Length: 254
Ligand code: G
Ligand code: G
Ligand code: NA
Ligand code: MN
Image (tube, rainbow, N blue to C red; front, side, top):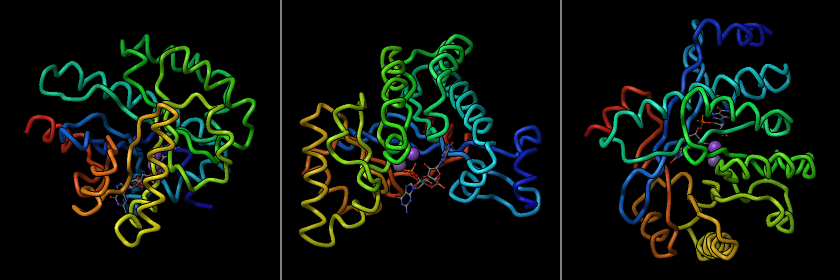
């Protein structure tokens, strides 16, 4: 298709950009980190969501080039924010990696290289991985995740609760953080069941010594309930939508 073809040239033509969505400490309201989210500025079609072009990229194998571009760009940006000094409250950037990337045997090597070119510490980088990616080939994934973990990279399980992984896998994966999928957050204040499910996920994570991030917080009611449940971190439109670098800089300096 035409889009498929266009996507092949998108990096060279500098049509990809990263937006950043802040992740907040719900108690202190401080920015704890930012999640990098890729967008494609298509010359004719306008801004295209990754929901739409990541699947195309995965089919065509072009995803690796995109993932690499995202990794490098997000890490260089994080380095810039850190050198802004005291204005920047946060020191972590979360990067979504595709299942393809997370099974690359040279992923750790690649990250090592980025650490040395940017001067970032491993603890400045969080990799977000979905359950769906991990269960495709759990044995290989565990080997790679352990290498990343040994390097000191922070690992986060994205969209938790929506995949088909069984809970019995959870403790095999050396993940530091659970991100509760926003579908659960949107049901949180609707009924007792919605509340119980989120409560259970938070307790599960806590009992496994994981940090918890609630995704897609949109209302004060949801925030209040999450704080009552001792959920520590969150992101969502209530705080901030994903921002272009200039807007993120304004937020940092405001
Ligand atoms: O930002 P938005 O809500 O449009 O993202 C839609 C989906 O695309 C989300 O599932 C998100 O995890 C995924 N996504 C966003 N940025 C990236 C990226 O840089 N790499 C990969 N692999 N997925 C991404
Ligand atoms: O799959 P992942 O969690 O990485 O997807 C992140 C996506 O969720 C981003 O595309 C972002 O635009 C979107 N998002 C972030 N906060 C909210 C929110 O509060 N509500 C909704 N509906 N979407 C959100
Ligand atoms: Na994500
Ligand atoms: Mn997510």
